[in-house]
Length: 470
Image (cartoon, rainbow, N blue to C red; front, side, top):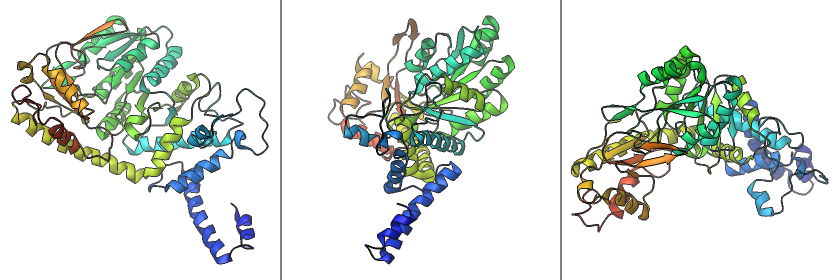
């Protein structure tokens, strides 16, 4: 409703009431104006009514919502179900064009604006969470693994003779398969044990580069966020090596946005050496449905190359979800959740350390991992060979999710490559491990993890399940 419509409304309703309604409308519009003007995440949260007003205004800009529109093409934003249309706020055309996921669609000005403003808001969030010098990013409707594959395929055009990707081992299947799917051979670098921590073997990295030749490597594929006892890779040192040997560097930052330490590592790596792109998951960092990621970097032209590599148009759902979430939280709300996560991580570490000590186990000392914790389960194995894995299944069936048990000697073959000691990130003896991960920003206090375990394991045979009786 514009000023003319409000003036006409005064014929039917008292002008003082109409002016009050106009002022309320302008308050919503002022927030939208600032968003479009600044392109940043608003400091304070928006009400749901403001968010829905904005999305409805965007939707009427798309041709499928034009009054009297007659679409005769194969892609005209047709939706059979009204429920589906409402679920997507009638933003049906998706984002991008056949040649570029970031391109503007002539038939969908509203959806295109949604895409642009989402990328701008997410870029602002990347900066205020620690990577201040990031220059460009875009939301892609694929999870982390396929987003990494897209980065590798883009680099193929820059380094057509490359065969290998150098990869410090992280026991997570999708990041390993992302390299194979792109058609490259991973060169797996086993981690080295320093105290309780598994850290990047820099000497082996350099030796492999010299052995196989820098020109034969597509990139180094490093990792920040991970399960203890592995800790984030030595990003600064790897970035320096990549700059020295002129090898691209892609960072898997899957759930690292919520960690100031992980974001600082990326910022420092880019400052002292080379990082070409870093990829983070939407669902892990922003509490939205699975299926989206952010690809970001320090060279705007390279990030544009990656966006142009995406074939065809793309779903707008991940962009819509993350924009709604960030507008609803506001920058201050998101920062508050990050601070709360860090505080609760410390509390969880304290509680788990006391728990482990009471049962003759110990919390592993992994100060370089700011997200995940691990405690030993060595005594549990003496009661039964199946006791370790049974503990994990018992917690799960009692609705304690997120914690996992890592038994000894597990072998896992992924696309023809066999990993010894799978899920422990190492091929040698570490001992049985109980993993806890305090990641995103949750409205449920971390202490719930410990309290749930106490509640859910009552009644278990105390002789057989010493550790489980918490």
